[in-house]
Image (cartoon, rainbow, N blue to C red; front, side, top):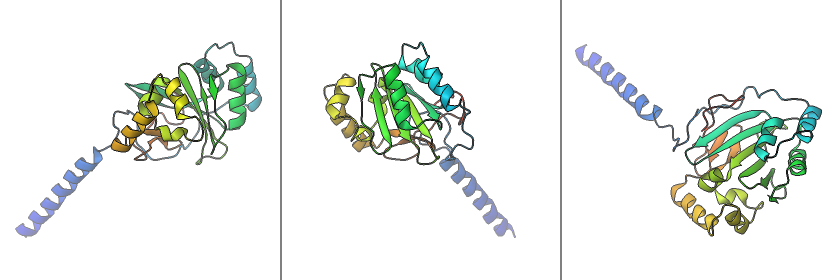
Length: 223
């Protein structure tokens, strides 16, 4: 009986140690926030289509940050010590209509063509990255990323078919950003590959960049 009891104790200790070892490995790599794999159970409320269009067209905003914040509800925030990316959303407007509204009211320095459900507008200090969600019907994700965030976290391959590497180098004030960043991504696997309704993700290891704990609503701590 004593030996049997000893075996049970050993098994319990092993289980506890295993939970501690694997439970603490969140793979954040410097990105703060939640790490749950759930899709959004409830998206934030948003105005009607006509109200969104009127809000944007009647806005006196002089910056793209203000325009996006006034026009669309915040879904999530990705924040590091090397940049920030705010994710907004709409189910009222198509990706094409969102791009047209933003471009009409504040002209970007560069605007890509639509390709594979993505489009990019480049402003002096920000990238607006539009994506059609593959997880939520009719959901358009509007990612407002600082150029610092793009420079330090994005994988150049994300922009293939959208923006030429020479253009990215110029917009990010680097002679060779695309090549150097691609090399870093390949060697470390630690590059951001855009946002999804599961949270931001790493191009090498899906899930390693996560969003705020206030999912589906207002601003959070970021990823």
